[in-house]
Picture 1 (cartoon, rainbow, N blue to C red):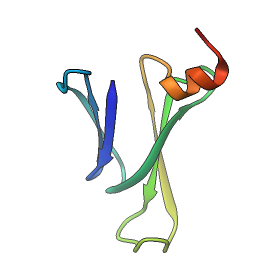
Picture 2: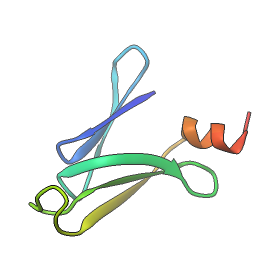
Picture 3: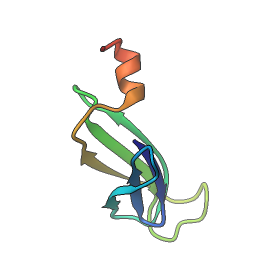
Length: 80
């Protein structure tokens, strides 16, 4: 799977580029995402809150429970 964050959402794509799901966020400017949590299945999405300018204001974070652990989390844990 591949993910793309932008425009108040995260889009999840299959390897053949089919859109699998769209995750709506509570803020409109996501800037980064990563899997974490005890089992690697929690997707954390961070970004700017409201209409704050870049490097200004407070940040926002949304979480989403994924069906599988993220690849980078799995590699860092040495999980097969």
